[in-house]
Image (cartoon, rainbow over all chains, first blue to last red; front, side, top):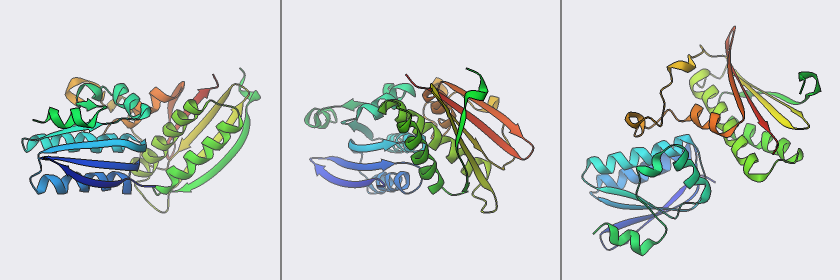
Length: 114
Length: 141
């Protein structure tokens, strides 16, 4: 199943619950379009909840990086929540774990944007 | 272990479309499961195969419908070998940047080969007369 995105607002933070597979094609383009849409609307505090992401490939990782930089270029922040072990391992292998702010607790992640 | 102990299990030609990555990954996962590979090793091998086939489709054959991706899977009691060939122009593996170098960390692309290397035990690239063939080998742990 390609990635589906369900955005919700918690205060001034947009939490995007992502589920499914983020792989080259529909999955990665869904993620790209979802983040781009929020950035266009001026959302500058974005928390990606990846707890239900079952699979991510190099293209999906690329979209995470692209989202991170596009939000940062608008003066905002994109952070990650609830990484599965496989996604966490991928971010560690690619040294991106040092780039993203990663949280396991949503409330703590929301507070970190303040 | 000598080469002649390997058994050819599957050989197929896939279309130059992204769906071929799903087909190849699923096929290799099935073979690895039959051989008794651990689930995490199967996941890593499957992902390496996916990245290889995506490279063949996107960068090798450039989605050209007249070109095919060659997939061959062979096994020995202790390992599984996967060859993925394309009919593209070829590439210089030394020209690929290091994606974990500080100045490349925020690049959107360029991590595929790096992840393949990380997820298999042996990886090699061979230039064909018309195309490129990568070989992935994973030992059963």
